[in-house]
Length: 317
Image 1 (cartoon, rainbow, N blue to C red):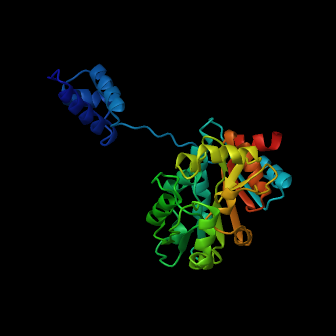
Image 2 (cartoon, rainbow, N blue to C red):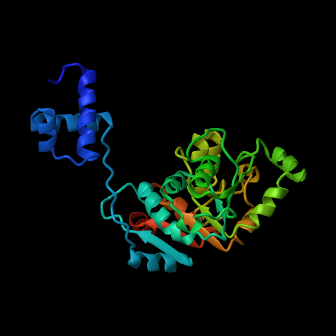
Image 3 (cartoon, one colour):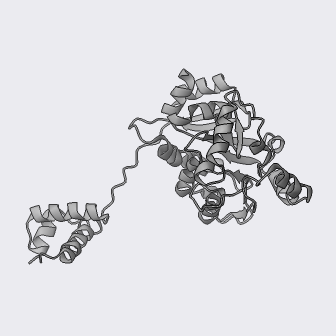
């Protein structure tokens, strides 16, 4: 007999879920073993889904959009475009997180000194990484390319670096300064004390950079994390800012904005970033087209990993 109490119903739903998905019993077998109807089994399975005991994750195939890759390479004069199909209209950022990880698993080598930046897209990539090439390697290093945030959000570069280390077993090199100094003077003072010298030396060793771009506006991670104020964002936009890379703001042509905010950035210097041998931009989202186009125009990235809806928008506008 099934009691009417919520607790007993929940317990029964859990038991049915285990029998169905852990032990592969059919609904008929479950009904016979528990002396209940198949209709009751079906209802208990639905209850288990609502409780979150049963969670369904549909993994769609990963395939390249070869035709779009060549067009994007030609239009933006970049070395390589890796574009993934989006046949099932998935959320672009979630799709590219999974697909980019699949590509990076075999692109990252054991002798790479890897640099990573902040961003929601980057935060989506790391959980899917397996990195078989790094198995048993304790010498590979991953380096933080920009300062951190005051909030422990998933898109904080410190959080991303910590998870990357956990996933890969790499050695981590943290940058213990915020993304923005309180003022230009404060930035100059800290810089004059050679506090950045050890980090600059490490940045010069990076041979593979994984970057993301952020769009200007209310959804900016720097605004969300309280590293920029609304008035500062309005000022950036009024000066033509469409996006950011490594915390620095640029216009649609990829030119960096003349703003105190760009003078307050604690992050990899642009001249060093441009000399990195492999510079990968991982990005997606129709709401970031201007930021992505401008980011490519900065020439800080020569490889882009994105998905087809984003690529088509870049090619059509």
